[in-house]
Structure formats: structure tokens, C-alpha cells
Amino acid sequence: MQLVDTHVHINFDVFQPDLEEVCQRWREAGISHLVHSMVDPEEFGQIQALSRQFPELFFAVGLHPLDVHKYADASGTSEAIQKVQQRIQQLAHSDSKVVAIGETGLDFYKAENQQAQIASFEAQLEVAQQLDLPVIIHCRDAATTAKEVLENFIERRGAVRGVMHCWGGDPTETQWFLDLGFYISFSGIVTFKNANSVQASAKMVPGHRLLVETDCPFLAPTPKRGKRNEPALVKHVAEQVASLRHESVEAICQQTVENAHRLFALQQPVTTG
View 1 (cartoon, rainbow, N blue to C red):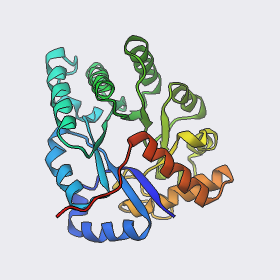
View 2 (cartoon, rainbow, N blue to C red):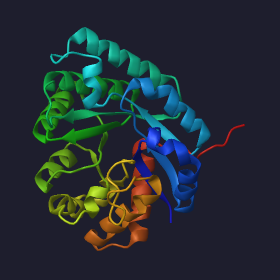
View 3 (cartoon, one colour):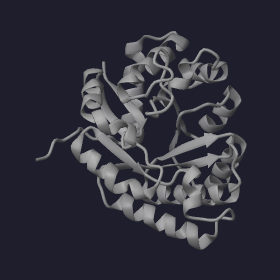
View 4 (cartoon, rainbow, N blue to C red):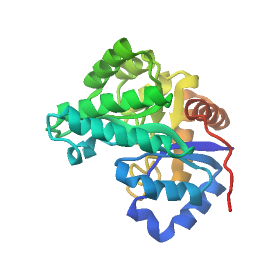
């Protein structure tokens, strides 16, 4: 069986001591591709180097909502956001292994810069649309506003495609984003004992819109909860999703791999000299 881990952060320091061993485990687990998300454009060189080191790793370019404060004040001035937008667009153009824009989105948990986050989110939606790339969306305590931003953008600019990553919403919220055409990606949260709302969402997502991820090094799935997460553990997410949906693990693996290839236009990994 093969799987695609559609959201990783293996550039974080916690992986540096044993990254080759981590890679060996994900290859042994049948992880054919990884999509590495970005939280800050300054990570570009580091992630690009990883994509050369590991041919199966593709990546996104973007600015995480929790890092917007590094580039813009709470009001999100147009000049500051425009500079970030131009930087992201330039970087996305510069490497053929860039398969998405993100992660972007909204995180209103203890946030005081909601307007700046919204401005950054809208700017990255524009880049994704201009480059015909999917957008990877982070959404925490902000589903209503994220829905409004996306609806307004689509009404003004036209369709945009992408994924609600590490999804933690309830079925009603899940349907909002399905109706807008988005994929829904489940992480280790779906394996947690009391994650009833997320599990209910996992049951209702149409098969052709379903993805799985680790969001490593965060949110290790049961039975590894509390430990460092890594790509090989995405198999536990797939197993739980299969169980919830009363489908075979093989079927979920095949479906999510097909979906990941469709959304991100993933190419066959090529080893270079």
C-alpha cells in the first residue's frame, strides 16, 4: 500500500538529529510523496534543499497566519501585505517542485491581528489563483470568517481550489468548505478518543475530497500520541479514517493517493545527481 502525507514540517529542528532514519521509516511505510508546507517565506531555501535531498518531497510556499505579525502590523497595511504577496509569488515561480501556496488561512486563537491575517489570506488566495495552484488552508477558531473570506473572494475573483488541512471542524463547518469545492485533510486528531466532532466529519466527506496528513512534528496519532510525529505515522490516520467509514484501509489509501495526485499534480520522484 502507498500513501501520501499531504502536510509535513520536516525542516523543524526536532528532526535534524535523525532525519535520514525518519526518511527510511517513511519509505518502509510506503509513503510515496510528501507535501511540505511552509510557515514563513524565509524557510524557502531550507525546504528547497530538503526537496533535493528527498526526491519524493514537494512543497508549498506561503505565510502562516501565526507568522503574519513578522511582516505586517495588526491592521495589515496594504504595502506590507503586497510585499509578502510579491515575495511568495516570486518564490513559487522559481522552483518546479512548488505544488501549492500555503500554508495560509486564519488562526484566531488568542489573536489580536485578525485584520492582518485576513489581508494575508486574501493576498495568498490571489497568488494561488494567478499561478493555478491549490491553496493549503489553516483554520483555527475562525471557520465562519474563513468561509466568508472564501465566499467573497470566489464571488469577486472566481474559483480557487485547495484543502482545509489538519481539519478540526464539525460536520456543519465541513459542509461549508465542501460546498466551496475544497478537499478536507485529516490528521492525528481523528484518532483521539474524544475527537467526536472531527470523527463525524471524517465519516461524511465524499471519498473524492478526502486527504490524510501528519502535520508532523505535531499531533502524533494514537498510539503515539504525545511523542514526536513523523510521516510514517500517517498510516494510523488512514486506518482510523477507514474504520470510521467502514471501508478497507487499502481503499482509503488508494483513494487518498489519487486525490493528492489530482489536487497537487504530483510528479513521479526523480533522483538527480
